[in-house]
Image (cartoon, one colour):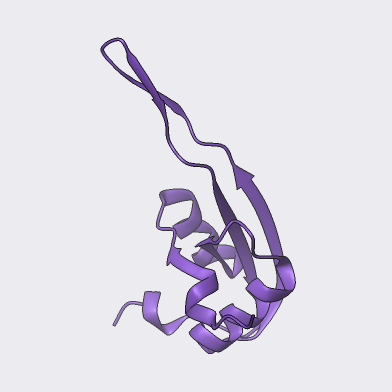
Length: 97
């Protein structure tokens, strides 16, 4: 089964730490499907974002336990990818005018 780039990349992650990494280190954070691997993430980022990718780091993030009164539930687990862009590349969508 072939998946397109938008099946693998769920959404970008926008946090203060990742914003600083994007500005200073050419790294962007993406929330990706849990069954995606580094090669798929790299190809998807290059196709969907029109950039050249140097490296991909992947982390599995465990969901937290949340309580409402006596009831306890668990947020879902998710996968985070930190994509390092090649020198000279930048993501126009995040750049200011």
